[in-house]
Amino acid sequence: MAGRTDPGELLKLAYDQARRGLAEGGVPIGAALVDPDGAVLGAGCNGNVQHGDFLLHAETVAIRDAGALSDYSGTTLVTTMTPCWYCSGLVRFLGIGAVVVGDSESWSDEALDWLATAGVSTTRLHDQACADMFNDWMATGPEAWSSLPSSAG
Image (cartoon, rainbow, N blue to C red; front, top):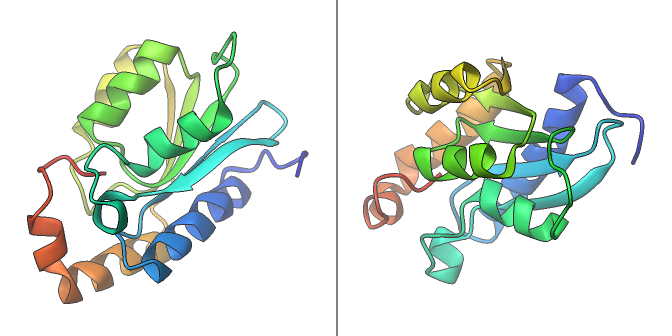
């Protein structure tokens, strides 16, 4: 799926993953790691609820799905929701060059500011569909969310 470089088009990749997670009964957060041409290197959804593993954040699943790369600097992590501190730390550790976020209002975006100060390009799309999917889930499934550690992104 090479040739996608528009942030809105890239977000569709993450949104599809979030929908998959929702269909599995999980937290509707999705992510994809793409190369400079927009080709998908890895993708995934949050697996906290359906797999009982609070380390399975959408961003970490997407990065793991990509496999080990020799250089992450030209990659972009696209996610439906602001990455938590755990995922943001991984972005900095690996040297991922850019982060595109669909919804940066439903969760604190302090980590995005931290990434930006470290030289990571950050784009906030303020995508209503991403916000609605997450907030609709929160309105009906808060018991699942409250059973997770506080940074379950």
